[in-house]
Image (cartoon, rainbow, N blue to C red):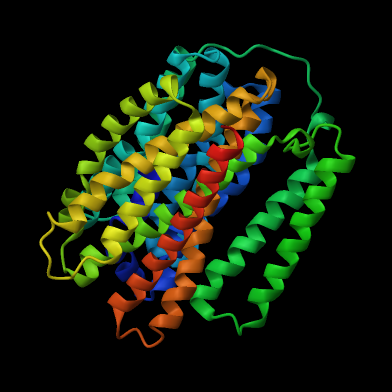
Length: 439
């Protein structure tokens, strides 16, 4: 979340440096990052299972450092290079996250301790968000926004030796590169990218532009080919769809709808605070800072809940928090004091985040063999990040149609939030079925 906050918190400042003010174009900065995180996590988790999770974890830091430098240098080129750099940064994050979770998954067996560790891992999301938002806003508002990317590059380089010193070495298993599902990787990653790109680009150029729906159709065809490859032809599938259980599918459905809604909530909340209520980036950071505290409380509470009640009930609770938080901000009057609906929405949303993510991770981890823990964590993280990116693209289309002339900014933002409410309602329905099906 540090890396996602980098482009959302100081979004207006970064956009102005490139001469960009269109909401659809601005949404590409975080969406490009989440897109590649969500798509490349799948092969990254599999490669970690094959060549060692610690090795891929370290490579992720090195990759991210390189593209953080390029993202900062993009200030001299333009926002196209910046968006490309953000996308390549996402690949670094894709290497890091599933392998970090896989390290935890193989270190701890199914136990209350494992539940608490995963819950605390989930707490890193709101805490990391605040840290990333504050430091990127400080650099953007008080000095120069590229420094936020360059400093983070130095931090990533410093993490490499620490990872080798602290993380235990992986168990070694003889593997061959032929064991990697190249055909599944090409069809799956390409399909996800094209499908997502079509939605996000349509928010900029509109659906009447021919290439948007052409890419959408090609993306869907590639995803259909991916499903066929994984179920019929691949000996070592990237995603073992044939062994996919209903419990895991429902958990991922809840996460997809809930986190897609969260992406809409956080992006347009920041735009609302800065553009409609006219606060600075640092003031917006201060208003969002309570998520760090409530996120930690939610993580600890989730750890205890997962040890005492069924995971399906925890997922259901998470959807209710997502829904309530979205409704509060969608209906907040512009001139209302911060402490009324905005503050309450901000302290509620981390409960949805910190309940859904570890719950889904535990469901997938407990239903996956030890040697496939990278795949399990990959599926959860793919769902989280891809849903954020895709939902932002769909929300951008809503904003474009509600506010085509750009004169009614608030109406566009509210339209996006109403879409988020719809996604949350879907998450609640899936969670209710999950509770009933596995009662």
